[in-house]
Length: 186
Image (cartoon, one colour):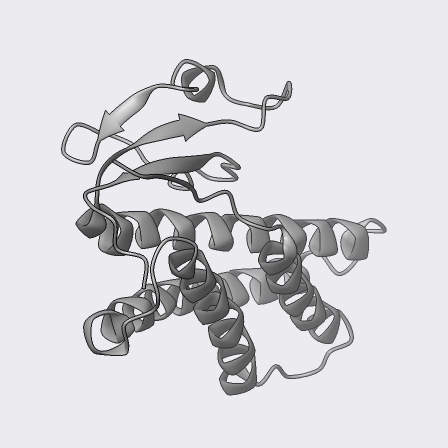
């Protein structure tokens, strides 16, 4: 059985955070946001993230996987639309707060990490689980790791028995090493 490390690069998280921070700056400056443009930028980043992650163990198969990748993106865009609406209301309500800009930009940065984590968990569940028997849970090993995630570190789970996936919990930075069913590199 082949083992593949699906640790992700922070590049995609950074790019998502920058998109959301740009949106937040527009709100702070009383400018309208073009959700279509934001959606396009976010979609590019998320598709790049999921497809590159899949290519670590298998070539992207457009016939089989295209719709799954697009569904992951659609799910995250719904969350981002809700976030934009909530962020807009929060900024309007807190205009007098001297720390508003700093707090709003920090929240956008964290939301970028959360969106990437949610996309990672969906990618694992909807795509990786079909090609593998299970995974080993990995943490980043620092003092911010949740105790319940630390308890899972280096533990093997089958997809059927996993009650939680890395990325599902808010702000989760964990990742997996998957055990493939067979050699499927192309």
